[in-house]
Amino acid sequence: MILPRTSTEATATGSSATEVPPAQGETVTAWESVRVRRWWSIVGIMLLLTCGVAIGCLMVGAQKLTFPELWSTLFLTAGMDDSVAGVIVWEIRFPRIMMGLFIGASLAMTGAVLQALVRNPLADPYVLGVSSGAALGATMGLAFGLGSLAGGVGVPLSAFVGAALTILIVYGIAASQGQLPVQTLLLAGVIVNAVCSALMMFANSILNPASLYRVVLWLMGTLGAPSLTALVGMGFCMVGAMVLLLRQSQQLNLLAVGEDAAASLGVEIVQVQRTVFFVSALLTGAVVSVSGMIGFVGMVVPHLVRMLCGADHRLLLPISALGGGILLMIADTLARTVVAPDEVPVGVITALIGGPFFIYLLMTRQYRFVV
Image 1 (cartoon, one colour):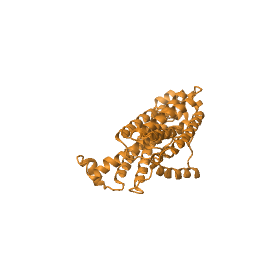
Image 2 (cartoon, rainbow, N blue to C red):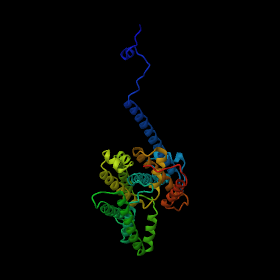
Image 3 (cartoon, rainbow, N blue to C red):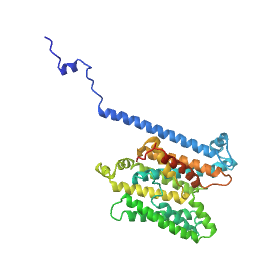
Image 4 (cartoon, rainbow, N blue to C red):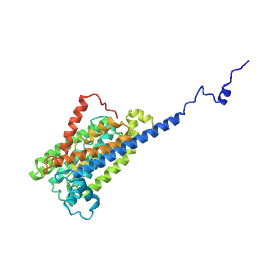
């Protein structure tokens, strides 16, 4: 009589009737490895695209440069900066392009985190009222004749002081009960925005025509002739804010499912809200103080990146930063070439780009906002 084999004997003889599935941990590790490679590929492509756009913007303008001329100016004739091409590249276009990269990255990154914080697709860097405070500060600076103070930094300094005071007022109103509720934060921003706008209109009514023209031009947004101090300072602000916000990316992912669920998973809600609020508000204040109000970049770019790459903030933030820089570099190039030798305010170009894009989103059902 032949007896059936036991499970031990079957295993010992190497029977393949039942194969053991791979461990769950191995599957997760393999999936994480694929995702990390995909993320680095996307970041690499965006970096190459950013460099390509920057090179193209250096070549385009009222005085067009060929690629050999640009290459010679950048790498081969370092001692001939007094040439026409050298002056155009190093003194005019390169500072503007770098400022556009820094400001576009700052606006897009700030818009992405604020949309996650308030869970509202219409949130942008100016939703907290910081821009109106900065505009009021700049207007008061021009009214008191600070435009030529300390080499021309009087107006940006006044704008940043106005933005900082607005941040403190909005935070003081929203956190008066010891918490930082999103609805109160938004309402406080709207109220402070309205008050600052009213004060700014009053200040504009008593300015002389020359100062009023400078205020209007500044409010429409411009990247013209940034100083080295402003360029370096904006770069440090952008990089520092990116580091701080990337450290909160996982917490922002958990906040997307709701505050209660995030709190149950160990997220310190109030601390994350405070960090995101102050970093975003201060970065917005720095942006507005050097470039004025440039709209739609912080609203359009995060939505576009979500459509292409998903809503994980560990990838959303750096890709939004690069995408915002690309958009603003292109917009500034159009602003200085469309009616050359005159110049269109870059805020007009970004509005003309952002408006039709949002009309497209509203008229189609292919995109759904998910933080």
